Length: 351
Ligand code: SF4
Image 1 (cartoon, rainbow, N blue to C red):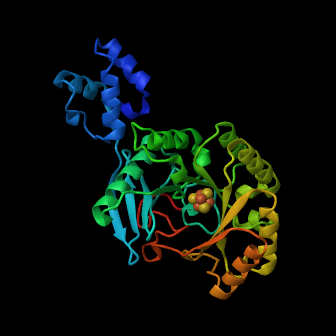
Image 2 (cartoon, helix red, strand yellow; image 1 turned 90 degrees about the horizontal axis):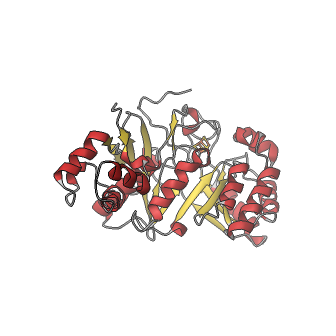
Image 3 (cartoon, protein in one colour; image 1 turned 120 degrees about the vertical axis):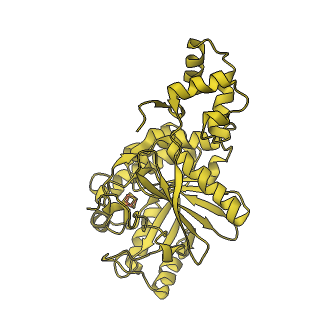
């Protein structure tokens, strides 16, 4: 591993400072910045509007630790799962989900995860480290390239729902959104980005204070403290009551209605009583609901609900005036579906 600093950890002002110190023109900082972010250049040699001397100087002091696609699997439903290799050999997974109306990238924010949600394959991996903003950004660029190459379309949406809890990697997550949305980055609209959290109340409030423009999704999965404690241990320290407070605070500050993600598990959270609890919770916070079809993971204790129960559950919510979407699973055959990202056959430590 190189000891040189990754130039993408620097701000444009810091690059400017470095150039000044070396007697270079300040306007080069902007050009370098564009190469790094707008054009995702992976080598100083390719920065063709810089002098040879400046390119050598940069290479002497910095590296560009770009991620790359190490492996790829294509599902029968056209979903593509990529293993993204990071500069230190760690691997995270990113997924391209094409539908009739959208081209969505599902990206990771940590190597592994510390939150041990019972239904999630990633939760069985140790959290090895947080991703840097550039590593999150690289996933978007690489998946976007794939969307253009395979389906002749650009990405339309980005969801931070891959491996890891983005709000436990707060600063780098926000920095990555900033790069994705800025004009000298990818220039995508923040409204096309959704950050999904398992529910870290303090950080949800911070999102409100930072007045973020992207969408927020809460992985709810049970609107009952006891059941949520059972499937998501994070609920023990971030109860539904705390989350209600935090989400209302977020809504007051940003005006953005949150989405509750709700995976329907057979005979666990898919009854009419569960639907009533969810409807009551939805009255406490301005929200809409995405019900997600479950994909059983190896040796997991949960099963997929039946379509009859799913329909009854959805209809109950709708009868209470709640906006509900049902998300069918994508990429099941390649373990790319929700809750299945686990670096299968790779060398990430398993609990
Ligand atoms: S659902 Fe999200 S927060 Fe929970 S273990 Fe999986 S990756 Fe981590």
